[in-house]
Image (cartoon, rainbow, N blue to C red; front, side, top):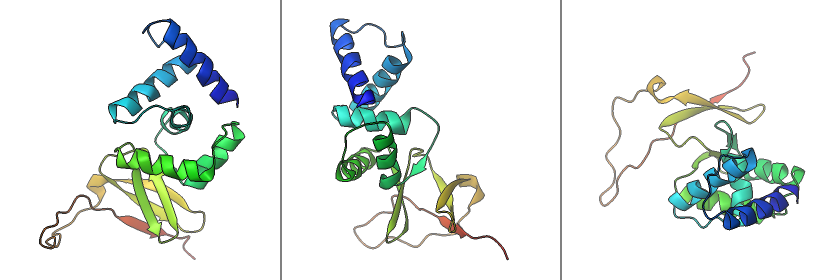
Length: 163
């Protein structure tokens, strides 16, 4: 509840200030950034989206699952269900704010870095690590079937400890 109550107080202060600068305090600046980030992507900044967005986007690039984000939200007393976390992650992905990384049929990660790059997947601990896009080269891609176009190529290189 702590983050949501702080968001509510900050929202009230922002409404009363009629557009005053956001940088006068850290939480307010972070909320303003997330709020405008969501609006720029065409998403309404609901309290839950703001709280989850603050966990996702106010730091360094991250790779996480819905379960990891849900556990972070619970630790921070943000009252959301796992279903809401899944729905929000998919909404953020559809809006272009996240990139979905499917490791296998049962494991999906979300990446806050939407630039063109690839990933290592460490099988033993389920960790995802970025590979710079210029480290992977293709001589040729297959032609897309009629009526289709290639939108992106995702490479996931699986790693395990050598014996």
